[in-house]
Length: 443
Image 1 (spheres, rainbow, N blue to C red):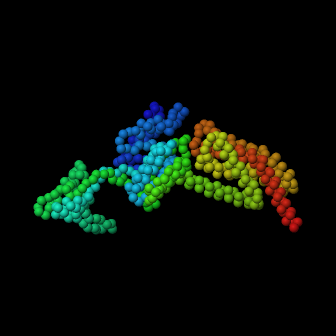
Image 2 (tube, rainbow, N blue to C red):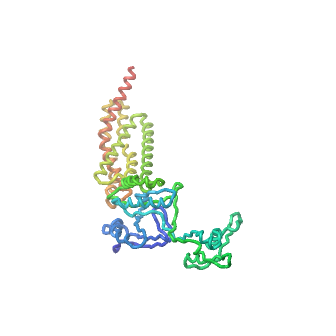
């Protein structure tokens, strides 16, 4: 399915599998890693390559689970849907995870559904047949001890070697066996001088054992993961649909709880961090401006340009058709420190004119007229420097492109609003403050 010139190298791994968060080891794992050449206009993107081969690759016959993984590098590093199913009984846990995977298969836009419960190896489960043991004149303890000696052995003594405890085990001499079932050919001596094979004293059952037992917050856990077609379904909506569907199964699995992590958890964590940084940044700016202007109210007039800038960001996203992503919010945080510059220049100029003896109205008009050109030059040079990155001229950046877009549109919009609204705010606030001072002095 790969076209000539698309793949740089292809490597096949057996016994391990790499994911975005951890490697998985085991005989049941395998992976084909495809390295691609740098993207050019004539080459398909990764999603197009995967979708072209998905139906045939996943239709491979056999007891296998096949999924595709894009190594994006993050953030975020986890898949859009990553749900930890937690419980105590493994059978109930497995049934709940399978039910959750059935929900995901029925959702439009969900693909590459998997879980981290590894397939175990084949096991031989033996149960003592007490009736047969009694008829043979043996005791269950004898049969049990014989089985232990043939497999792991029994601890006969404990000693210490260089401060570490060492167990001394007694076990039967190892024999070459092609099948674990040959273990049951061993014959136990009977009190009357005869012998009986172990196969007549036990009932056997072959089944698949547990591959691993993962824990999260002290409970057994199976993590169900899935990828999304972002053009048809977003991360928040997909996780909300899963949670709504799970509410119909709570009565069926009362001892199971879900922990939503993955990309959704990364989003919430990033939003909390961005909000904290934004509040901290605005608070520090207020302290600096308050100390510089020696006023409680003038910093608020300056910080009023931040909502104006955010309005420009929203308008820019609508015009360009881009979503409000985490990278865009990073640009909004950076924009908060840039957008206030024009208001600082305006208010500082008006304050200087008032100290020189001008009236409030005259000082406001003077500052708005004399600071117009410096403000426009500063804003235009900043916009010009980031325009190529925001517009994608010369190549698009998935990380820095949204940041530059937010800053460019935010500065352009906030500059226009600052030149119009900040002089009005200054005139109203300072006029009211002067009236209050005169009233206080007259009283």
